[in-house]
Image (cartoon, rainbow, N blue to C red; front, side, top):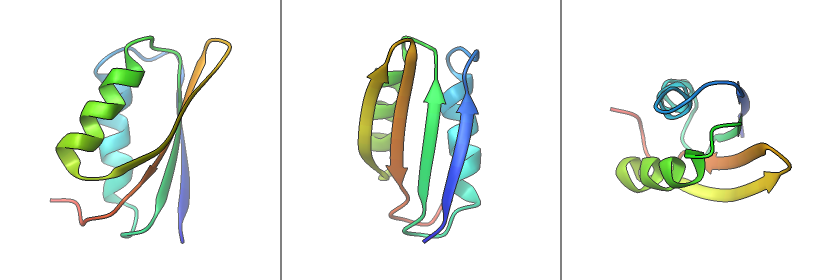
Length: 78
Protein backbone atom coordinates (compact mmCIF):
# COMPACT_ATOMS: atom_id res chain seq x y z
CA UNK A 1 0.00 0.00 0.00
CA UNK A 2 0.99 3.62 -0.40
CA UNK A 3 2.74 5.39 2.45
CA UNK A 4 3.01 9.15 2.62
CA UNK A 5 5.03 11.26 5.05
CA UNK A 6 3.87 14.71 6.17
CA UNK A 7 6.24 17.03 8.01
CA UNK A 8 3.99 19.47 9.89
CA UNK A 9 6.62 20.50 12.43
CA UNK A 10 6.42 24.20 13.27
CA UNK A 11 2.76 24.48 12.26
CA UNK A 12 0.06 25.19 14.82
CA UNK A 13 -3.60 24.23 15.03
CA UNK A 14 -5.46 23.82 12.72
CA UNK A 15 -2.74 23.56 10.04
CA UNK A 16 -1.37 20.06 10.87
CA UNK A 17 -4.86 18.52 10.64
CA UNK A 18 -5.77 20.53 7.53
CA UNK A 19 -2.59 19.41 5.78
CA UNK A 20 -3.21 15.83 6.87
CA UNK A 21 -6.74 15.99 5.44
CA UNK A 22 -5.36 17.22 2.13
CA UNK A 23 -2.69 14.49 2.10
CA UNK A 24 -5.28 11.79 2.85
CA UNK A 25 -7.23 12.74 -0.28
CA UNK A 26 -4.32 11.66 -2.48
CA UNK A 27 -3.95 8.26 -0.77
CA UNK A 28 -5.83 5.15 -1.86
CA UNK A 29 -8.01 3.31 0.65
CA UNK A 30 -5.58 1.29 2.77
CA UNK A 31 -2.87 3.92 2.37
CA UNK A 32 -0.88 5.07 5.37
CA UNK A 33 -0.07 8.64 6.35
CA UNK A 34 2.82 9.30 8.75
CA UNK A 35 2.67 12.77 10.33
CA UNK A 36 5.18 14.59 12.52
CA UNK A 37 4.17 17.75 14.39
CA UNK A 38 5.41 19.95 17.20
CA UNK A 39 2.00 21.38 18.16
CA UNK A 40 1.05 20.25 21.69
CA UNK A 41 -2.64 20.25 20.66
CA UNK A 42 -1.96 17.65 17.96
CA UNK A 43 -2.75 14.49 19.97
CA UNK A 44 -6.33 15.52 20.68
CA UNK A 45 -6.68 17.12 17.23
CA UNK A 46 -5.71 13.92 15.43
CA UNK A 47 -8.01 11.79 17.59
CA UNK A 48 -10.86 14.14 16.64
CA UNK A 49 -9.78 14.18 12.98
CA UNK A 50 -9.89 10.38 12.78
CA UNK A 51 -13.22 10.21 14.60
CA UNK A 52 -14.71 12.74 12.19
CA UNK A 53 -13.31 11.21 8.99
CA UNK A 54 -13.54 7.53 9.87
CA UNK A 55 -9.83 6.93 9.30
CA UNK A 56 -7.91 4.82 11.82
CA UNK A 57 -5.28 6.32 14.10
CA UNK A 58 -2.81 3.44 14.27
CA UNK A 59 -0.05 5.19 16.23
CA UNK A 60 0.10 8.28 18.42
CA UNK A 61 3.52 8.74 20.02
CA UNK A 62 5.71 11.43 21.52
CA UNK A 63 9.46 11.54 21.02
CA UNK A 64 10.90 14.57 22.80
CA UNK A 65 9.13 17.60 21.34
CA UNK A 66 7.88 15.71 18.28
CA UNK A 67 4.43 14.14 18.04
CA UNK A 68 4.16 11.24 15.57
CA UNK A 69 0.95 9.86 14.12
CA UNK A 70 0.26 7.01 11.74
CA UNK A 71 -3.16 7.08 10.11
CA UNK A 72 -4.75 4.49 7.82
CA UNK A 73 -7.21 5.63 5.20
CA UNK A 74 -10.19 3.29 5.44
CA UNK A 75 -12.75 5.12 3.34
CA UNK A 76 -12.71 7.29 0.24
CA UNK A 77 -12.31 11.02 0.77
CA UNK A 78 -15.37 13.14 0.04
